[in-house]
Every structure is written in C-alpha cells, then in structure tokens.
Length: 70
Image 1 (cartoon, rainbow, N blue to C red):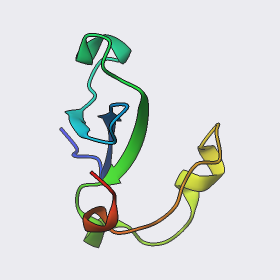
Image 2: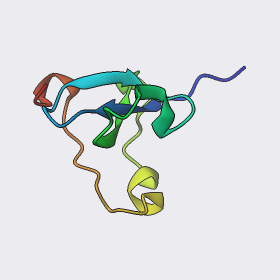
Image 3: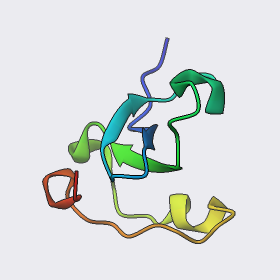
C-alpha cells in the first residue's frame, strides 16, 4: 500500500487539531469545525502545486505544521 504525503486533519472551533480524518465528518462526534491538509512527510512535497489545483475551496496556505495555531 502506497502512503500518501498528505492527510486531512479535523480542527474544532477552538483551533485544536483533533486528529487525522479517515472517513469523514463523523470521525469526531460533532466537534469538527473544518478540515486541513497536512503534509505528513514534507520531504515528499515537490512543490508542484497539484494540491492547490484540485482544492475545491482554494484554501491551501503552504505553511509548516509547527506554524499552525493549535
């Protein structure tokens, strides 16, 4: 099985990262406010911008995970 370089994580109203989303909004029992994509292995990102081209909400920010307010 191929491991993807990025995964969706759930974030609550208080900007706390709840954890990885595997199934959908039901993963967090109503606590989910929004979802963010996090590059799990930044070295695998080649900077091609493909994630930005397919994002339906145009919400990519391209910041390091340690800079995300949590």
